[in-house]
Length: 108
Image (cartoon, rainbow, N blue to C red):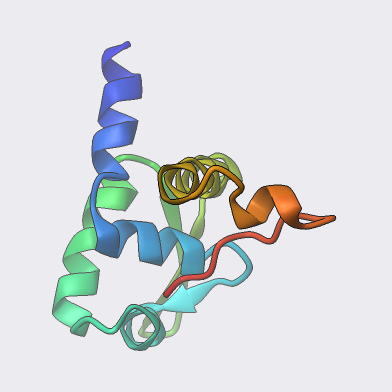
């Protein structure tokens, strides 16, 4: 149970959620992630370090650049489900129920 709570605490930050969503389909370096999530590279690096320690993201070195990717699909699925749950607090008929194929939430 304690590890489960730690996973949720890692996801309890808007910047980290945006990073996870940005990495769901691509492997990216810090500067690209910083642009996507609209934060400084230093801030994104700190969040990535926490996600890496939690084994939510993995790295790959290419020369002097470090690329980040999700370790597996579970963090992305948790974030998506949490966003769908949040939609329920806004509407009794949320958009993901009306769509033939519910879209994965966007980074923004």
